[in-house]
Image (cartoon, rainbow, N blue to C red):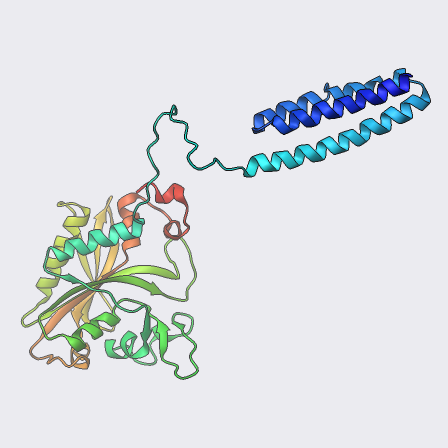
Length: 332
């Protein structure tokens, strides 16, 4: 008789436990169920602890039943827990008593914000914003820009070439300067354009270099343009981006498509920081585009918007711009 009563006790516990588990809807309710039935002081544990008061035959029967029940209940619990984790709120189930929450909104990428600010500054000075292809021809990326075949920029460790069975002169542009040639090829002077876009170079990535980056190119061509026009335009740009009292310095530098060439630096916390390269358009570049270099002159410049943003926002690593970390991106 005691054996029958103990077996019925395990069976009753199974009925109660499975019924309670079916009615548990939330993860909190499921945890409470686990503690009540499977916990160290739970009802099933109490049955197992009571086996010592039974004789050996009763202990075998009740113990086997209780262990089978534990395995069954643990399996059912895991299944219900997974269901609770994956359950979705039914459509229209809105708790109108909850306080209102400001919806999460997207925003422009920091690079896009800086590109727009840069191009807007030049737009207000009479420059038109245009864009060009990221997959470029060798002719525009190098030849028409006075970059000969033996120039280091053509080395395979700098330029990313595109495999083509039919031709071998297609590449990912290394700068936005090809648009100088493309614009002049199709446009009669005067020309005033800024060209934002992505560029690609096969080089090591570190805190100040990326293999893929943005660049903003500028070009102005007309009769009588001088180096003074270049300096005045870039002085004004620096004042608009970095403030009206910002000091600017020009130093001689070499770029194959300008002559003379300069780098432009700004006084930043007592240090001169280079922010762009510039210069007067090389006569060969003008002539390659079909312009009369005796009649027309011009200037060009190029800058990296990420590096300007790094200065403006005290960012120490350019890789943050392309890491897709919302903790960084949502600060702008």
